[in-house]
Length: 165
Image 1 (cartoon, rainbow, N blue to C red):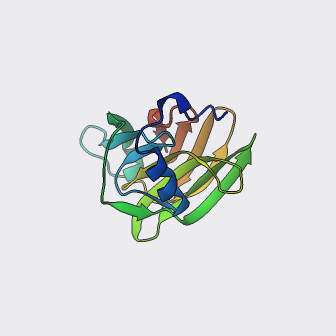
Image 2: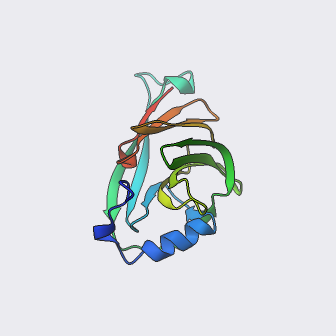
Image 3: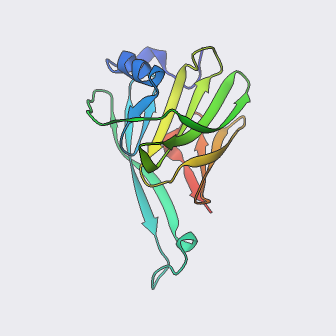
């Protein structure tokens, strides 16, 4: 059984999520999409030092969950088929990349390491820049954006991501 998917709480959106994932599509806004069909809508908050940041790396970033939905619709899907990095561990695969049609969109996904790469979850951020590196360990999927920010997604709670420089 996949510990990153609660099969007791499958939502009506689950078949659509898996169909879209097989087509390498994800919602076109900041979110974490789970295999059970639920969706965490996320918001990126950029906090600068007092007086403003002279260097963008001086900003502190937080990506926090502002809404959890078990029933939802969207017309805005983006391609997530540009894979820039991949890592495998213990029967799972972490993938990271960009939406080629939207240059600043980055995404990170955790899948099973099976023939179809069954989705556990995918995180999409419109402001992150593409993710060019990814490492999978026992507890986290850690991805580095092309702008140099490190995003550490807990494997079992990716909405609790921590972002650093």
